[in-house]
Image (spheres, rainbow, N blue to C red):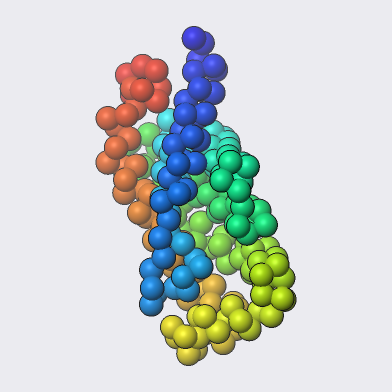
Length: 201
């Protein structure tokens, strides 16, 4: 099997694992509204970005959401899958690019931190202009106040959407990135030979 074919096979396998991990989602009551879920499905995409390059991180992020939408079905009118793809791509491509030029433990840690931070920041405009407007229109009759009320139940100061996103969603997304990063940093080296089809670097 040539190198290009092997990379495609590994990407497909990681996409399948990421798809399965999307089923493992949970809410954190009292921290953020329950409709915002924590999940670790970016772990395979980050591993792919480290092992195969940032483009493969993007591919894995895309494929897992396509599989999720068409096999499990969407409960968000595909908006949730789109947001997951955009944020996952921001995370894995950023981290993958930094690691590509710094392939060592320090580079992995820095890339993971920066990737998590970028994903948290990107979550603000993605949710502000894409996810929440469409989600609100589809499920709350266009009444954004119903969504904001869920945040206000946790913190009374969350009286505008941007505050909800800055004070709740961005830190939540950052922590999600850190959680995925910690797992990858610990398991990447042992799995590196398999991911590369040779001795890991």
